[in-house]
Image (cartoon, rainbow, N blue to C red; front, side):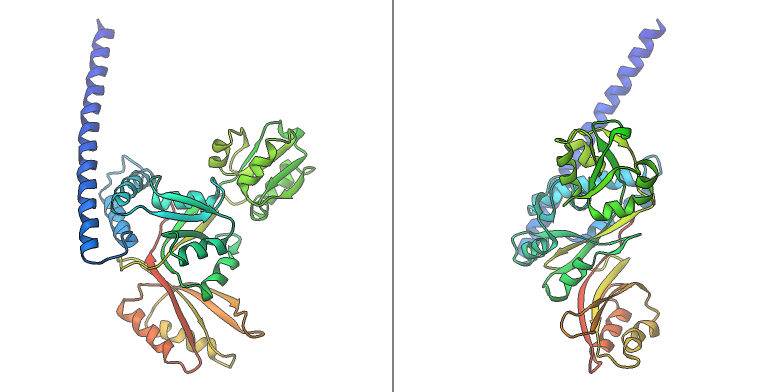
Length: 364
């Protein structure tokens, strides 16, 4: 009798879940209809930017404050990322360029930002990503700009100097590396992966595979493809690469620093309106003279504007001439930030290029 009651109770709970699912689906359809209407209004108003990162950031932040904690924030973000992406596709299909092939960390970051309904195109290198976005063939592109332990991706920075693109969003992605292969670890003779990944796993490799030969590959996905034909080879790649290639994971999270994070930038033809918690990215330079760098930074200091990053790079125009990449707290339209930027423009020997303002991302 008790088993029958338990079964009846379980069936009742499942029916209640089915009812809730039907309500959720109806609400998602209602949201999609409203998003479609937003798209039509934008078209009538002549707006070209259907993707508005500041609005999406505000939605996610608001939902996180309302979240009672039953569902982790990361899961809530993932659920709404897919809902927002699906609704956005009804306004305008998005085409996203990333560093290919499928399964790379850049691909993962792109999908985290735009969801599974966008159209993705893998590119051979960073130059091609910038080319596709600058020419308008792709709506947006995703490129890595810095790693928490390895520092700046200098090639990405250099491309921003002359290219006519804007930064409209940033993505923070926790980086975890896994050892993939078909043979036991004590039989591994060679390990393939990207050079940056080798650097991030060096201590683990020395401790666990001291006799294995380390070979650089074009990408982690390419490394995984190579070991399908070499029985005593292994690759270091992401969990997504392992799943896509049906490769066993021999060891998980082998990175030397488990808090490792890579920051990616979303580039397009526009930046983002203020969201209430923003960053602005700049590139600046001045002539080589005493106090020159002080003159560039003083307008921010005087107004209490925090700088979250400063990176120098050769200008590639004159010998020993440098430009400075800076991220600052605030939006370019904020009064204090706008005034500081105007002060820099007034410098007789200064150069200023605003790369974009965008919502501050959170690591989930």
